[in-house]
Image (cartoon, rainbow, N blue to C red):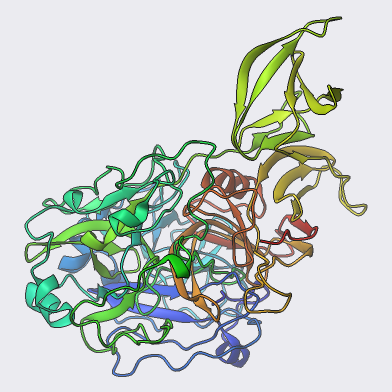
Amino acid sequence: MIPPDTRGGRDDASTKAHGPWIVVAVVGLTIVVALGARCDAGVEGGEVWTLGDDAGPGASSEHAPAAHAPADPEDPADPEAQIGDGEDALDGGVPVERPDAQAVALAQYMQSFVYEQPDPRAARVGYLRAGAYVAVGSDDPVNRRGCADGWYPIESGFVCNRRGFVVRRSDPTQRYRPTQPNLDASVPYRWAHNSRDGTPMYRQAPTRAMVQAIEGPRDAGAPDAGRSPATTGAVATSETADPAAAGGTANDLAPSAGAAEPATTETASAPATTNAPGAEARSDAPDRNEEPPASAPATRATAPSPGRGARPTERPATPTRAADQAPATAAPGEEDVEAERPTLRTLRGDGQGPLVRRLMRGFMISIDRATRSDGMSFYRSLSGGYVPTSRFYVLTPTVFNGAHLVDTVTLPIAFLMSGSVPRMRTEDGSSRTERVGSVERKEWVQIVGRRRVNGQEYFELPGRVIVRAQGFRVLEPRPPPPDLGEGEKWVDVDLATQSLVAYEGARPVFATLMSSGRLQGPTGSDRDFTTRTGDFRLESKHITATMQGDTAAEGPYSIEDVPWAMFFHLSYALHGAFWHSRFGRTKSHGCVNLSVQDARWLFDWIEPVLPPGWHGVYASERRPGTRVIVRGQTPRG
């Protein structure tokens, strides 16, 4: 799935023929719009549809990237009712604080578009997510061209009142909204990893009778009945030695301070933070998570997508090889899941009943809140669906940071890829050394010189310290492109060394390890996921983007709200990966995976700038995207 292209914003025939896949979901009175994105070269199409329609979406088809953004979903009868009205919306919602302005524009849809000019034919320059608000720069609309209730100016664009936004002058503090991204943390939301094939996602918080009808008597007994979500959802971490023992999968995750907490009801508590069973692995042990766990729900209610210009969907596959996995045992009521390899389409519900879709093991959801229904515990995802907490593990990313190159720190630097090596201080004019600590796995050092000692190569570090060079990955400086402007920002992605360096002109300012697309078979085979090389410019960037799709080799995958997504070409993006820590080795389906800390830094640095309150922004001639150069030969394996 891909988001719309960045070059236009008209709702014309070409949009309808080639637009990206959109989901419009109605949960209570809250509107949820989703665009799927995928990190493959392929593009998957679809059609607009609504939860509860008599007929589900038509068959998706392969097509070329869209030349324009898709048409907006139909305006509801009462736009103000979309956020905050209804029992479901009030359950665990967050009050909207009044900004310091006479009027505010409150976003209604999961993608409420901002236009470059006060005209529906103008280009879309970005969007806000449901529940976000921005200050309006005028008490009165600037015009009513194609917008009956008027266009209002906001920072960097214009919004149409009652077409994706509600412009209000009354006190909005009693209005409620979905959980908003935490922009003070390295991750904007929290995620949970599904541990079992066939897990149901319900359209609303189900009753026990509904669960029994969908899942059978065994699960209707609800092992978590009468217990809060805190007692049923374990936190999986990246250093878990054997996640399979807990019924889940490894996910290379460890606590991250300041992560956004899901809103909860008065009776619900936050998910537990105990580690999944298993001994901790040593820091020099190989990564357990060879394949990233697949992700969240992929049908009707799905988190919003990147929108115009963004496009990938990373498939975190299951971390264990298929040959090592025992076949999943279907629970009663799951016999309708296709016996052969399922697809996102075959996992959908019927479009009328309580089931939105089934989730495969490894799918990941972003958590809006924890809630209870009829004595059972559920997570409500930001896509609007409800899933049983007992089948999910809450995920938090590991901490890995690249090198901020400031003051006297510059390239070359080197990252230790495995194990631990001693730091040795040398004495002037003497061959004697003393140990002064060690360099640990994934730690970086600055190289100020090289020498050979007893036939082995050593790196010289600041302070007369040397370390043996074996096991390090060296990142060397690169000259800027000849046509680069003075001091212009650009990003160098080296597939051979699996590294990324951010430059301002000729000066490197940040360097880190990344994971690009894998090359596991002959070029052109269904297992060739190599990252596209070339000289690009960033097309769009998004606080989060849902990524999902089907692959011939590995089946369906779905991850809600992949953080800090920066699209540079078709379905290829730089983005944070919270489901693994194999940075420095190939892993993805074509995107460039970064740690969430590194992706957050790059997201703030790279252009175009995301205006306050926006969820996504598209590059334009007025605000061009940063140059991204991808080069080198992908390592095999």
